[in-house]
Length: 199
Image 1 (cartoon, rainbow, N blue to C red):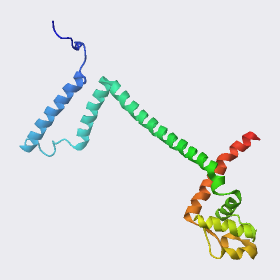
Image 2: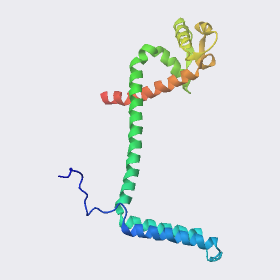
Image 3: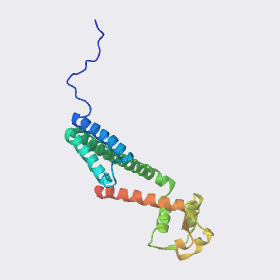
Image 4: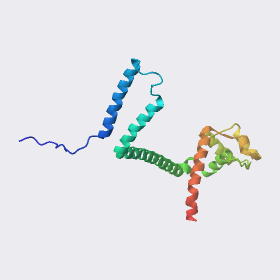
C-alpha cells in the first residue's frame, strides 16, 4: 500500500496563462534574433526598433496578462488598499497614544505646575500682555519656575517692589518652557469640549 500523500489535481491550471507564456516566449525569441541581427549588421539604423515601439510591445504583453488573469490586477489593487489602511491605522494609533499622553499629563499637571504658575507661563507665551503688580508670592513663583528651567531671568527679587510692569520685559521662556506652554495649551483645548458638554 502506497503511503498517503497530497493528491495532485489534474485540472489545476498553471500559475500563468498559456497565451501569456506563448507571447513571452515569442518576445524572448524575437529579442534574441533581433539583437543578433543588429550585431552582425543585418538591420540598418532605419530598420531598428526605437524605444517607443519596445514600450508598446511591453504594454501589449502586460495587457494580455491582465485580460487573461484579471485577478492579478485585483490582487495588486487590494495590496495598495491594504497598505493605505495600514498607514491610516498607524496614524490613528499614534494619535491615540498622543491623546493618552495628554490625559496623563493633565492628571499630574496640577502637581507639577500650580495654576498660579501656569498663569505666568501663559502670560509669557501669549501675545496679549497684562500689567503686573509685584509681590512676594510672584517672586516665589517665578523663582520656582526658574529652578525647573521653564523661565530665565536675573534679579527676580526686584520685581517684588515694582508695579505696572510687563512680565516679559524681565522674564523669558526657555525652550523647555515653550514646549510646556504648547502642551498646556493642547490640554486646555482638549478640556474645553468636555466643559461644554457638562454645561
